View 1 (cartoon, rainbow over the protein chains, first blue to last red):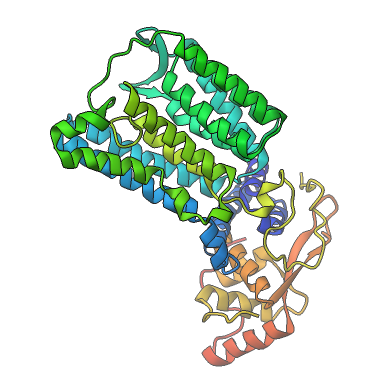
View 2 (view 1 turned 90 degrees about the vertical axis):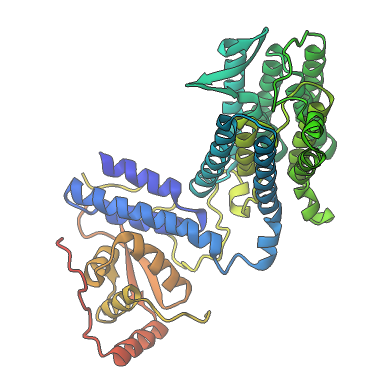
Length: 370
Length: 102
């Protein structure tokens, strides 16, 4: 019945610190005699779930220090928007086609909206992070197998008129998932992604993945990180031994140098935009920086470095929707995880729970009326 | 207890509705009497419980096969607070702002 689906959705969407209220809502829904009334009530309860999330964002329990701990996500968001706007300004003054500006602008809006929607509706549990990594790696492998090829390089998925470079969207996400959780599944995701990038082949993305995983390996040495770093190094070497015949694309590749041909200010603006893109880590006190912060920085530093060295896409500041979306989607994994979410799908509350009575539904599935 | 803001119309209605119930009320009952939707009701009840104005408990269902329901009642502080709202606004207890059919 539809009410049961909605009840499951309510329990899934309610934040951990209000779990008791999800059970209260479900218990109330199950008492309705007619399906129609139950569904209408359940739809209203979904709004309550959203409000619980909003309350979590502005809760007085979330003290100043916690807000300051989220400063990386906030500064990364501002940095991404600033860099993207810098890129749009460069495209405008350098005479790029209007469609490029429109696509970059749309990617900025879409990236922000998708990231915010996921942040609000999904808890950053270990299960979610692992699933994101595995899904991303499967998409990369699928792209390498059946994606759109240009000059023997199979890196793109054609969605309507748009060429989407999936590695720019999912590789930072996978690297950050691995920085957050090192287990067999995230390691397999990194290995699969490394293999996919090697057979695409894509030197820039292979370098990015290796740089990011090397940072994780350095900061969290262990069997999983070491294995992943070795595979990524082999993947990078494999891409170096394969020819890369794709010519530089105007407004995409080499722009960190060619922008100076337009105007010295255009060139400087792009470099400043790139520096802003990698600056969020400096807004976090040194003793609070984690592997995730350094991995995020390593991803984008590596991409900018290879873009400066060869004919590879310049992330965010150049033309390309994939990098823009990848940047904002990676913030989903970067954001601060409440203590209750960092432990795999357990029900320990992250906020003071004022309910002194034990819920009879806490550890068992509710029994619903027929 | 944290310093509370002036209660909204919905909160006032819900509190006054609870004031008359000596043994507490279910969420749906409060919702009907206060004329609010579940999207407003549950966050409001959660907030009121945080502020120790009301308490909630589980009550076994009278009908066999149905799950326990959450029941809400005012604390001593909550009763004083709700009574002060009645006195201040001269509202009749349990007003039905937007009556809904069951």
